[in-house]
Image 1 (tube, helix red, strand yellow):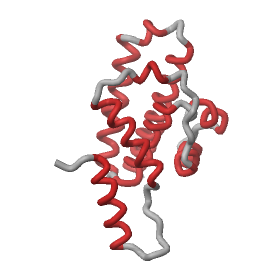
Image 2: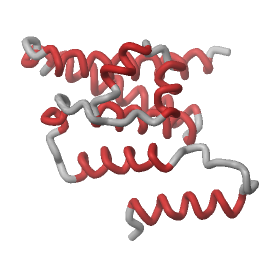
Image 3: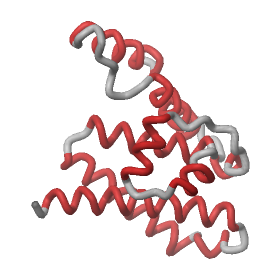
Length: 157
């Protein structure tokens, strides 16, 4: 069994082995670290909603640029991505965007979109009075919809 840290070390070792000395890996260490954090939170069934008030996340420059590229305003990047959970989820989207083929990305974004729609139908009304939760869910939905639509646009070219 390979743990997350070992797979990250393998990624950097293999990249250094196969690339030019001056090249940087496509996914920086600080981004992979955030992916590991959200993976661990999900694997251990942590309540991510409890951490939406935390605004201590340092947004990696690659993630800030990615967020702007997918149509997220600078204001939203400054506000929403300061939340560690939202920043970590955006890091997952970034890694998926870089590493996965279009068919896999399309499948994953469709699944995420369906899950968000299910949440809206069943549970969104329970949180209507909590602006932090609803705006965070809206932020995720908008991000996923944009990424999903960008894959769909590529299919039609």
